[in-house]
Length: 321
Image (cartoon, rainbow, N blue to C red; front, side, top):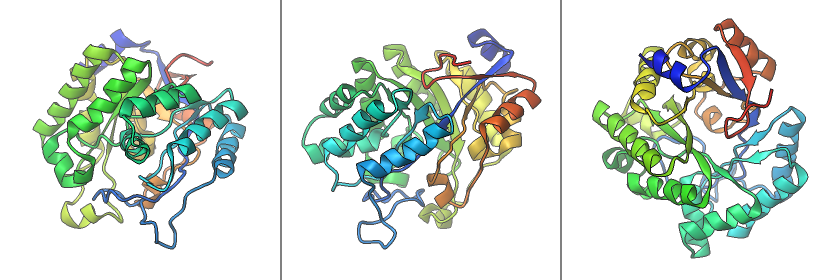
């Protein structure tokens, strides 16, 4: 059923991918999410916040390897003013006009607003004026108040995530929707998550894709409390059910990076039409002891081996070649 829906939404012979990188500008955070192995407190020896030039060096390295999308993210660092973020976007656009700044998750935007004592809309307008046009969907976890209270109570309920994407869509941003599952959620929580994003998509038509991935427990507080309940079979079930339920989403993204290359290939036969990105630089999963690497050439080969024609895309899913 998922494959039949996929064939109606996208070219059934093609699978898209993007050449991208996920660098980080800071690991300092005060939100204490139980699932996160990446964050550090300000006084920790390995805490850091990069300068503008250091961020641009990371972007330049990715661009030299063909990256067209930069998904920049970090912790919730209250020592950084709003101008820090807008300067990054503006300078990225100036130095690398071929790159899409796909930066800052919901909770980062919320932190910017708190530090600058402005509204969510005010932050989004500032980022827009700096040149940003898309927003990543990270930080959703599972959009159930019950789940978010257990995993990341300082982030607030599900509506906190929703209101940022709703405001972004109304300003003209495109964004992705994500889900990190395999911890404390129930099937009812997953359906609630799907229903929230499907309802918002009906309202704004601002989401480009849905991207689920499984919880990586190593080095997290949650590892000691709730063993991970993930694997390739639950993942394939998740993809297929997502494709069927989210009938107003054009794209469902497979994740070779989080689930493994073989599972990524198989997922292309379970409703997914996109193979995600090359992730030249990635540190959040790595902090949880999970590292998966692939060159652009290997990504295209994996897609071909699965029986599809690889098509490079932009952040917003228009074709490149």
